[in-house]
Image 1 (tube, rainbow, N blue to C red):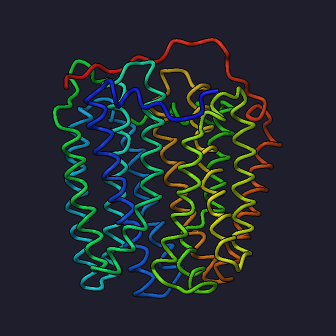
Image 2 (image 1 turned 180 degrees about the vertical axis):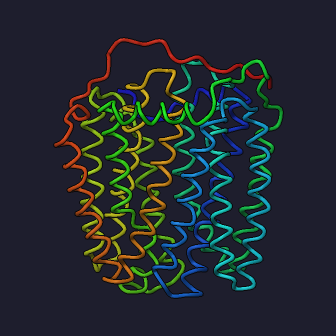
Length: 416
């Protein structure tokens, strides 16, 4: 059985290689940004609620801009849109460095919201460019490589950011993030979308039709709800600073190990993704992984031992990565081609907005009952929610992928 990542698209498509490299480097910069923002807010306020507010500041723009973008993203030059939004992200990161220097917490949180809104445009635009630079049979491998790059960024980004914050300064993390966007811009150079390939299907009616399909199709509805509640109820990242302070030494280095542990599990799961992608019941895989995600967070919240906590967080990262892979498989395989663009936007709302809102919830609860109990409570409630969703609609758990090959959706042709 083939279980390792396929690097064929990197070898056969220079355009994809450039696009992927730019995204991989800027993903590391994004981890610098996230770590520095979280640590700065905690250092300046000492409040889990304020750290959680960073999640809210990111989640709301991601949801709003992604939904608005779904109305027009198929009718514009996606590469040009990605370039403009990337320049905006670069400027925003430099402004965040200035806000930290001035100790302006409110401004930092507002700039986090701006950065999230711009990311809600660049993310879908970059993903939609991939079919134009790789062959159809390489699409799955290309998207798996993109996922692997993100997981690796989670592994190395926080550790490098902690070193920069310790040896240089916290604002320098934002400066480095800004520099990585230059690499992202270089990766987009030469890409464009011919006007004749643009879609004329846009507007609020198209978005509503996509929502209606997701609500009526039990497999799609179950997959999206399962992912949403697992992250909304149990996302733990906003609790890391307080958990580190309450149970361990409270240093930036130890804080970095928390996010690194999650990333180690995610990278391992990404490298071994063939274990689950060769199974024909992705819904069942998603349920098992979602329950495992909750259970490991219950244990991590209750632990007073650093190694045990890190081990449980690593297992939670692996479970989450496989759950997300299964969700995408479910949604894309159960959705007709005419709805896939809109459902991809809805996936982004669930996959990114859910965790950010979940971090706000975690911070608010942790501010009342403490970080460890809040993490364990979140894990338990997410398990109950996932099992409840499965009990009200078993179609997701019993859904079986067709074994024969199917015709892939058409990829946009784009000059490079």
